[in-house]
Image 1 (cartoon, rainbow, N blue to C red):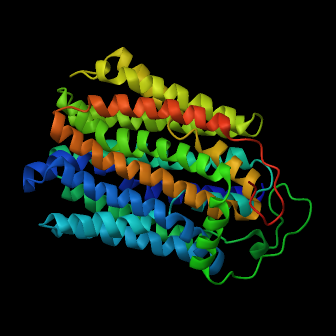
Image 2: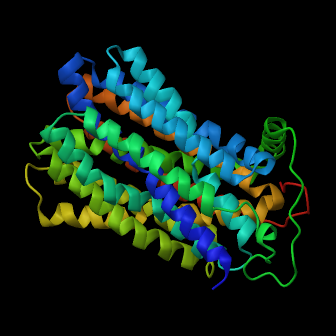
Image 3: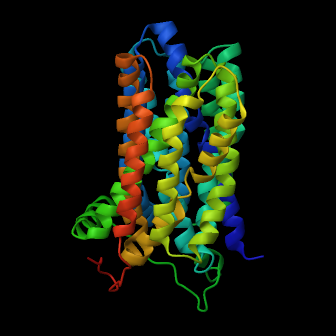
Length: 414
């Protein structure tokens, strides 16, 4: 078996370990409200900072990986996540939540974003990229599946602090695996990338990482596909990380559903997300990416319109159907979006995808905050579900507008 598959496996495990922090925010709303009296808008604002920094850090992290190597950047990022999550145990004021969870965990997690998976895929594979992208994207869902039920049980039985410590330890445990097993480039071990016909020399370190990230952004921003990809991915983030992952548990609890039951439903989303994302990678290798995106967004928007009438004190078959359906579509958008970035932007695709991912997280951050404000204002989340469904319908139309790319080497296409 080619060494690239072992590197992909280490990347998969690394993303699983870092995914623990993504499972916790939706479980914190009620405990922090009860202990400190903070409104859901305040907690949502901290989650919003976290999600925004997660996205804005990604393109710079991709450039830093070109400068310092994947291992160093990822090991430091995991350590920062552990520090930020661990410090929340001693917080007593809302600004500390913003600093520890919003700033530190946001910066660390941004360096562990999907740009990490994109960089590994681009360096180690020339074939099966869609499939590998789907598998690595599914790693985040796998982490959610592993951690979410355990964290919800801790929060319900003991309180939220043991759950925060668990997140910190999960990030630290992965660091040795990254340092000992992950390699930056196939040339480091004398191999060709998987599927390559010729040996590819390791490129020299690229200096000026921040400047390069900004330069690539300005190049891409002069092209139409970038704005369409960024717009659709912003809606993707708004309807997943910002909406369901952050607000589903408190929304279900509003309707009388116990927190562990609601958290278990999110974990089930993680199960089917793995299936849906890997399948989407397989489809992306065979079908036109923009049409796949249109189908994914249209189905997601339709399902959100039915959610307000499905929420109930108990888990019933229609709710299970929604969870399975939404899970299959959760981040199925990533492989075709990444494929379109490669198609239009070539060697700069990982950094361009980092900026597109930034829009994903900005959309998530906005809805994480506005969702909490809407709950405080209207007493329910109904308006948020309907608005998100309409946005997904718009994203489906935007995806169809993206035309096929004819890329000039080294130059972003219009």
